[in-house]
Image (cartoon, rainbow, N blue to C red; front, side, top):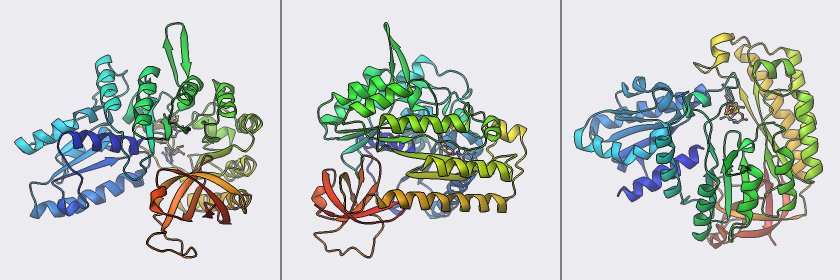
Amino acid sequence: MNKLDTALVTSALKEAGFTLTASVKEAEVVLINTCSVREHAEQRVFSHLGHLKHIKKSRPDMVVGVIGCMAQRLGDKLLEHEAVNIVCGPTQIPQIADLLKHAFEKNEKRLAVTEKILQKTTDIQNQTLERFESAYGIEDKQIPSQAYVRAMRGCNNFCAYCIVPYVRGPEVCRPPEAIIEQIKKLASKGVKQVTLLGQTVNSYKYKKGQKTWSLADLLNASSDIEGIEWLRFVTSYPSEEFFDEILQVMADSPKVCNYLHMPAQSGSDKILHAMNRHYSAAWYLELLARARAFVPGIAIAGDFIVGFPGETEDDFQATMDLLIKARYKNAFIFKYSPRPGTTADKRLEDTVPAEVKKKRITELLAAQEKISDELARDFLDKEVKILVEGLSKKSHRNIADSPDNPQLVGRTATDYIVVFNGPMSLAGRFAKVKIIKTSPLTLFGELS
Ligand code: SAM
Ligand code: SF4
């Protein structure tokens, strides 16, 4: 989501005459796009702001804006920060160029957030966001052939720990024709892979005439677009609604990548209930089994929160049990972070001590690493098709490098990261790579 918002803002500002600088030192404007999901992310923003405050002492004309979820959550409190000139929530990002212009001309602080975030967004807001969304965000310089397209905004689920509904507002599904048009436009610019985004993207629905469009319909229609070769979607909420239809499209369409990111959050039914997640651990595992039956070879990723209020050792063991049974390709595991305003924070005490959270996350990560390692080993000596993203950010010492044969990185349809040496001209193109070495999170290969 945040990457998409960054791309939208970047291209809107380019059109307004701004250019990107290589470093903060050269910048006249610094925008920080923020996430509020965990406290740690917010702390990092404050530390950046501290640094910017320092820079602004010698360059008082520099304009600093905070955009995104933290802007919506903290609003005027954030505007009070010495370094900050603009605070702009996710719903207001279409105004960003105007806000900046104003900050330059009048040297005034400006706040643009939604006052009653839990209320349904107005038609005018939706139309403004829609216009902004379909006009911008086409480029992702680093990965020229791939793009994110929002299928829905916001979330209505109110999981007890989660800040998203309070900063992104209620769920709004974008009209299917707007999504399809946007994908066509992207395809005409050379985009080969599109990832459809939504907090619960599998529950996408939009009534148009007699027909209610689902994610399965969106995927089907997008599969027909010439130039688009891979389609992905994230994140899925464990739900019966449309599940089989979506899996069927995945099984039938060679363009829909065999990858499902479906967070479980916990393996304890007691904790799932306290989290306001509407499923049991056993039923969640049944969904995974069904996904694997529909789409053999599907790669599944999950999320977990350890140390949710009231999580006992038995609850944690139930989570461990689920993780082992689920055999995820990878799992994103977080320590519970109380978020002000959420029901968990208001009603439940953060009972699990920090060192217990740490121990549990370490154990769960170790168990997942073992599974990821086993699953990755299956790729040894096999050839995989990847979409090449560009230069590998991390340098892996055991692969020989030369200027015309640098270390590149790509991803398989099942979301495995593949590192190999090859010409930079492969960036944004598909390639076949033979896997010669594996690690839990990365496959290493040679161009076939
Ligand atoms: N919409 C997605 C879903 O329902 O699975 C996930 C959205 S959230 C932005 C991404 C992940 O952050 C969640 O799956 C959850 O594991 C984690 N998360 C959310 N709130 C959290 C909190 N208060 N503390 C720790 N982790 C949290
Ligand atoms: Fe947050 Fe739950 Fe919505 Fe995901 S489904 S964004 S975890 S409230």
